[in-house]
Amino acid sequence: MNPQKARYSVALKALAKRKIRIYANYSGGDVVDGHLVGTFDGEQWDIRYTQINTDNETATGHSVGDVELLDDGRVRVEDEWESKPGTGESIHEEVNG
Image 1 (tube, rainbow, N blue to C red):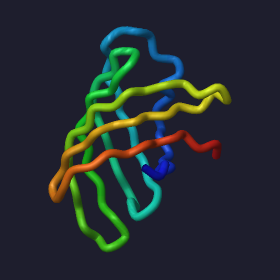
Image 2: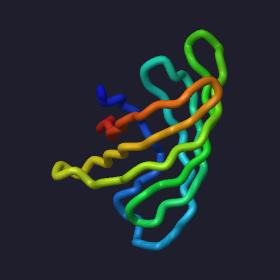
Image 3: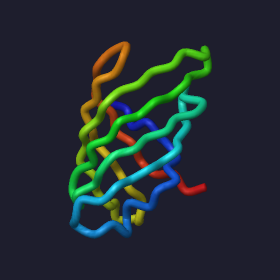
Image 4: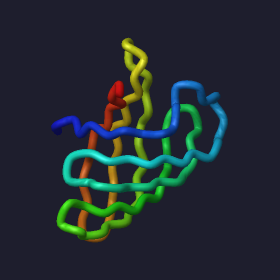
């Protein structure tokens, strides 16, 4: 798997080990604008998302992923997702911006 860099407006680093709600906006690669909402239990996120790409195609889906804090302070998520139009696996790493 190739890491896909995404910019998240949520700081998962500060979240306690309890099920809380998360909300984020993201973009990167072919994704021009994306939004997610879900829960985070301190180890995994469970989210629903919708996004639009550079070809103006929309996609929506569900993802469950393991969240970890990297040594340099960035957040990394390895997740499995299903969407319309497909399924797959991704790695997301926070970018400093």
